[in-house]
Length: 421
Image 1: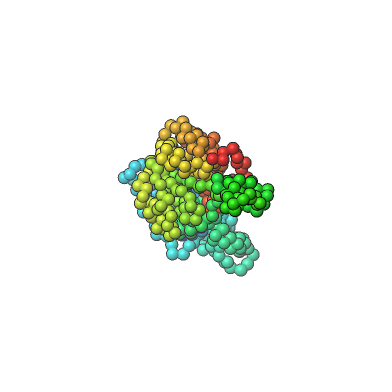
Image 2: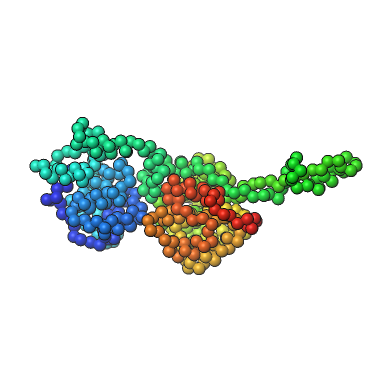
C-alpha cells in the first residue's frame, strides 16, 4: 500500500469514539475481516486513551487493537485507505440500510505492511516520504539498521501455526482458521466424573461387600451348606454428559466451534446435545455422524431458529420438562454454552436453573464474553443463572477449551457428594 502523506491526508470530522469504532468495524467486516464486539470495545477505549492527532497515530492504534494475524494486513490497509483517502464517511454505515460505504480498493498482490513508527521518524528526515521500507518480517538488507527487523522476524518464526490458533479468540478467526480449529475442537476428549452403579461385579477380595444372594445361590446349586463366601463390588461408570449450546445471533462468532465440540462429545463420549435460540432442538442423532461437516450441516438444517433471538428460560423449561425429569439430566454433568443475553425476565431464568440444579450433578456454564477485560456478569440472564453453576469458564479460544474439559471432569472443584442421584 502506498504511504499516507501527512501533508495530504487529514482526519475526517471528529465523531464520537463509539460511533466511529462501530462504523470502522462494520467496514472491516464487510471487507471480510472477522472483528469481534470485544475488539470494538477495546478500540473505543484505546481512542480515548490515545487521542488520534494524525492519521499515522490512528492507523497504528487501530492496527494494534484490531489485527491478530499478518495475513489480515492487506485488507486492513485497503479499508483504512478507503476510509481516510477516498472520501469515506465513517458514520455512513450507521445511517440506515440505504447508506453504503465507499467501494474498497483491491488488496495488493503482495502482503505489504506499513513501516514501524521508528522507521517513520527516520524517514521524515529524508527528502522523500515514499521510499520503500523492508517488511516487518522480511530479512531486509544486511546492516546494523536492519537488526530490529531481523529480531522481529526471529520472534515471529518461533511460534508454530498451531500455537497461533490455540490462543486466538474464535471471533477473530478467518474462514480457513475456523475450519482448522473446528477439527481440533471435534477431537477433544471430554470425560465426566465417575459414580457407583447399582450393579455390582464379583470380587475376590474379602474387603468388598459380602454378596449374600450370590452366596446362597451357590449353596443351593451344591445342595449343601456353602463353604465359600462370595464378595462383590459396585461398578463405577461415567456420569452422563448433556450439552446445551446457544446458537442465537449474539453467539454467532462462537457457535460453530461450540457445535463442533458437541459433535465430538456425541460421537466419542456418548453425550446428549441440544441447541437453543428461540426454542430447544435436540441434535444428538444428527451429530452422531463421524463426518463433522455432514453432522454440522444436518444440525444447521434441523435448527431453523439458528442465529435468531435468545429465550434461555423457555429453553431450559422445555429441557427439564421433556428430557431432564425423565432421567436425562438426573445425576448428569450439564454444560451450557451461552453469553446469558436473554430476552425474558431474569427471575424466570433463575427459576429454571434452580429446577435444573435439583436434577443435575454438576452444571458448567461457558460464556465467551467472560474473556473480555473487566467483564462482570451483569447481564440479566447470566446474573440470575450464575448462583446455580458449579463452574463458570470462558471457552473463547482453543486453549480456553481446556478449562471447559477440566470443569467437566471437576478438576480443582469440590463436588458435593450428597448429590449422588
